[in-house]
Amino acid sequence: MDLGGFLLMRQELFLLAAILLLVILEIFIDNKKNLVNWALIIFAIHTVIGFIPVEEGSLFGGMFQTSSLIHLFKNVLNVGVLIILLQSADWIKKEIVAQHKSTEFFILMLSSLLGMYYMISSGDFLMFYLGLELSALPIAALVAFDTTKRVSAEAGIKFILSSALASGTSVFGVSLLYASTGSIYFEEVAQVLTYSNLSLVGFVFFFSGLAFKISLVPFHFWTADVYQGAPIGVTSYLSVISKGSAVMILLIILFTVMKPFEIVTSYMLYMVSIATMFVGNLFALRQQNMKRFLAFSSIAQAGFILLGVLSNDQLGVSTVVYFVSIYVFTNLAAFGVIQSISTQTGKENMDDYNGLYRTNPKLSLVMMLALFSLAGIPPVAGFFGKFFLFTAAASQGLYLLVFLAVVNVTISLYYYLLVVRAMFLRKSDTAIPYFNSSVTMKIGLIIAVLGVLIIGVYSPIYEYIYQLSSL
Image (cartoon, rainbow, N blue to C red):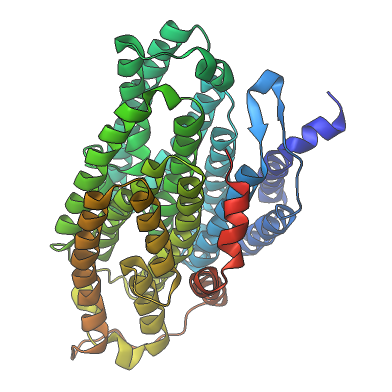
């Protein structure tokens, strides 16, 4: 294999080099706060390099494949992780550096991202599973990273046990698909796969394991507890990066491998979408902890994503990728405000946000913008994302599903406005006092806000994604 072939894995190789460089810097840099700054600079360089175009192709006999759409999605993940690291930098310097494990935080997160790279670039089920495990194991350590809090350790245990069960379920499904087709390569499976009870059961098991990472009902029970117990930066990572990569590989497998099951998968995804939207929204109504609040919100958003998946064509792929891109910036803007407040005050409940606009107006405006985008209120990006999802579902005649989705948008608008009301309309004698966020937090929030505003208003972005979406 020549150098040009290896350059197809440019993002993976550069990220691996960044991880090894962090290990070396850990040895030679004594001031670990400076090491945090170096980690941010190294990953920022990696993110910028990622936007250099890469050729389409495959490696290792088809195990690894890349395309312009996959490359674009990796860049979206890179930007999301960069925002998370910027928002977490102040927390790491204040709490994690003193515990002498700041470098480990970066290495674990970047190792998980490396696994997601390989997962969405997989050309067979073996590479998919290797990427899945490489992404999941570091997350389990990250969830339990805050060893000073018992709830973090409990969340780590819940995640690793649930993740192990989900991985085992997926592998069992893959074994059944292999038994019915005689191959694990996506292209070969797509050519010989036929409808049978064995292959159908295999797909159901495989989908069940993947639905765990996306937090689809009824595979969502771990989500709220793990989100609440994990450090906020890790919760952000689970909510957008882990979920987004799982959605991408689901798209690839459904549209390229599981075409013979199109009718069956449509019925299954139809019911799962309805259940996910209603369960996520109805349970979000009752939440007071902001991390649990956004956990159920993210479950509901996963239900909306399935509207685009059900479209099962180029329009569906482009709308899902577009919506996930918007969702990355929107959710990270909301989590960034929560992280900023939690780092400074330790407060994470909705009632703590009473009167926030009077003391911290800029943070209140960022949170309002993020919540309006999650609710789908124009003219922010979330409105256009949901509009295109509804359009994709309506193009397939799924009018009842679109109607139920609109009902759920109405429900979500109510509980998102509860937070807005607390910040802008309610008064409190014990309101969160004014504080000045760190420079890295401000940069992270600015990038997230610009993403929310630009992606929705600048229409060529969607047109560009649509051109790349011919899977």
